[in-house]
Structures are given as C-alpha cells and as structure tokens.
Image 1 (cartoon, one colour):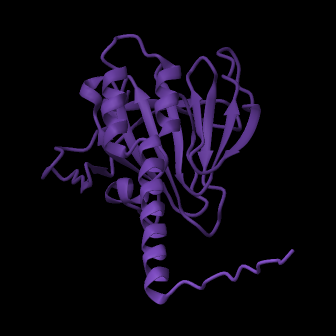
Image 2 (cartoon, helix red, strand yellow):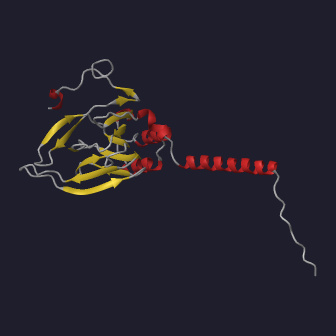
Image 3 (cartoon, one colour):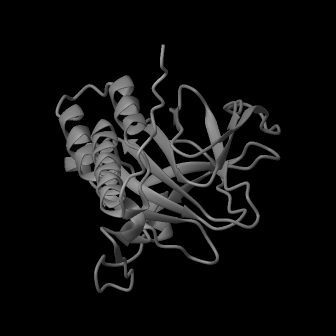
Length: 236
C-alpha cells in the first residue's frame, strides 16, 4: 500500500492579510459584545432613575446596578477634578431630588473624618485605585469615650460597599501614599449636612457639605454660580 504524503500549503501574503483582518473583526465584535454585558455610565444613570421612581429604596437593586457598571475612565473623566489639599466631591446627577450621585477624587493618603450619613443610604464603588473603610460603633450618649473601630476593609477596582446609620459610622481613606483614587458615591436621600466625630472622645459636631464641581463645572462659592457659601449658623 502506498502512503500519500500531505504537504501543508503556506498561505499567500494576501491570504494572511485577509485572515488577520477577519481576526481583528472578530476581536472588535467580541469587545462590543463584552461592552453590552456591562452598563455604560449613561445606561447606569437611566437605570438608577428607574430604580428611584418608587419611594422605597431597594438597596439590592441599587447595589446590583452599580456592580454591573464597570469603570471606564472615558465615562467619568470629565467629573474627576482633584485638589492638591483635600478630597473633592463632584456632582454627577441630582436624581430628581431622590439621590445624589458623586465622583469623589482622592489624592494620595487623603482621609475623611469619622462621620454619619444623616439617615441616608450610602453606596460606594471604586472607579480607580483602592479605598479603605473603617467602621465604628456609635458613641454612647451619656459619656465621652474613644470610638471603637469595628472593622477595617479595603475595596479595589469595581467593588461596591454600602453603609447606613443603622450599620454605624465610618471613615474612608485612600491608603496609597503615591497614587490617586476615584470613587463613585450614591446618597439617598441627598443631604447637605452630617455629623463628624472625634475619635478620641466621641464628641460630635455638625458639618456642612459642599460640591467641588457640578456636572464637570467648578463651583464658585463667591456668588457667581452657587450663591454664598454655607455659614456656621446654617450648620447649627
């Protein structure tokens, strides 16, 4: 019996080019399919508005919407405004008065005071870098004492965390001393004041909350865009 030897024919340069074009097309298609699986920012905003049509806040639905959205700097770069001396709160959406959606920008090592959330729901999603959260118990009303940390945890890219006053107080920090961090925050209902707490003795004070930018435009508290800044009397 004679054995026939099969010789594999090499592709011509034109065939190779056609093959590469086909491969590039398939990759582009897969990327588009992958992108459709996850929500772009515009779709996220629409989804949140749908969720908040009801007066009752479904925290699991909000969390799910935030988790499905995968961070894309092209979506949020226009809102990401940094200050070299403090973390910044940049308004993305006022949510028809039912919630505020913010992009918060943290320079290296920047940290919040220990604070509550004025009986609001608070969701945080990491868009860039890493954020560290420390939970604290509420202080006793009848005596001064150091606040006790209950839990410390770090959250990485696209992870979501949630807190309310029923859970406790918290403090957030960019733990990286070199790189920046960007987070997406949703507060419902919105609020413009909260309480901050002294870790050493549990004493509390009212604090007014402002925005660094609104819809990508710097807020001018000298009266040009936002009117006068809150006075101390407003926070009593």
